[in-house]
Structure formats: structure tokens, C-alpha cells
Length: 237
Image (tube, one colour):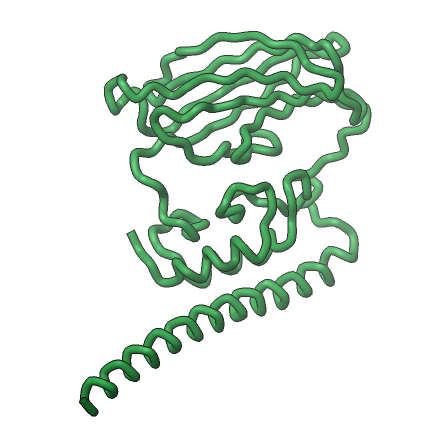
């Protein structure tokens, strides 16, 4: 009887210890976030660097088209995230001129599968906010080499007699990627936490928002994503 209670108490202790370690890990990640964010804030208070200027140029007086999905791709030639066979993909094209959305602009969309074969041609007009969209379903019946891999989407429009375009790549995978493996090196470790910290407390549209860090795809990088990162800490593919 005494042995039974000892085993039971040992099991309870181990469970409590595991939960405590996970909580500590979350707070460790948040501490990393706090330290790196404070350093980044101090450095960003001065004149923006050349890298920052090149990544986020002024759009004043420019015609711009930005192609993205609900899972990412904000900015020129960015990744649109992961999808699976049978998923419905919505492509959004935001057309602006002088930072204002251009209404009723005709946008041409083209989508290429992993074999670089164009399988979709479509057009749509922008709404009052300057956004046009199309959607399509990734077939689950085609051969795997036509489905799995990197897809490419291209959107083109004309604004003020100027042609504007953007390209967007996205991945179609059979199995879910390793959650928390932000840098895609096959493991969840301090490198991922460092990248995560740079996007901490950001939302879609913020300059530091990184869709790779939005682990639950809700448009925000917050405590929920930090918890997911902590729960997958140390895992490898």
C-alpha cells in the first residue's frame, strides 16, 4: 500500500514538474522577447538603417500592387504560408496609388503549380478599398508532383498608365510543418525564439509582423503563439 502511494505521488510530482517546466519555458521566451525588443527599440529610435529603408520604402507617389493570402505574403515577393491538398486558397491583391486604395482596377491573376505549369488564369476588379480577390481549391486528385511543393501566384494591374505586379509563393504540404520551427531548419530552438521576439506583439500590417511567427494564423503574434512555441520546444523533424 505504501509503495502504491509512493508511485502515485511520484507520478503527480512528475506531472506538476513538467507543467512547471513548460510555464518556465514560456516565461523564458517572453524574457527573450523583452530583451531583444528593448534593444531593437533603442536602435530603431535613431535614423532608419539602409536595410529598413530598402524593405519598407515610402509609397508616396507610387503605384503599388501587393499580393497576399490569409496566411501571409504581405510585402513584395513574400511567402504566402502553408496549405494542404483540398484547401481553399484565397488570393488578395491590394492596389494603391499615393497610399490610397484604387477602386475598380482590373487585376489579372495567374497561378502556377510546382511543375511551373499555369493552371489558373482569372481576373477581378478591386473594391472600394482597392482589393481584388479570387479563390480556388487545391486538387487532391492530381499526382503528388503536381500538388506538393512550391506554388507561384502572380498578379498584374495598371494604375495611372503604369503596370504594377507582385509575385507570391506558397507551399502545399502533405503533413503539417513542425510548429515553432520558424526558420525551417528542422528543430525548435533558440534561433526560432530570437526570430519570434522580433515579431512579438505585432499584428497583420505592422512592419515587424512575420507570418512565420503567427503560429495559430490569427493575424497576431502574442502569448498564444509563445505558448505553442514553448510546447514544441526541443522537437525535431
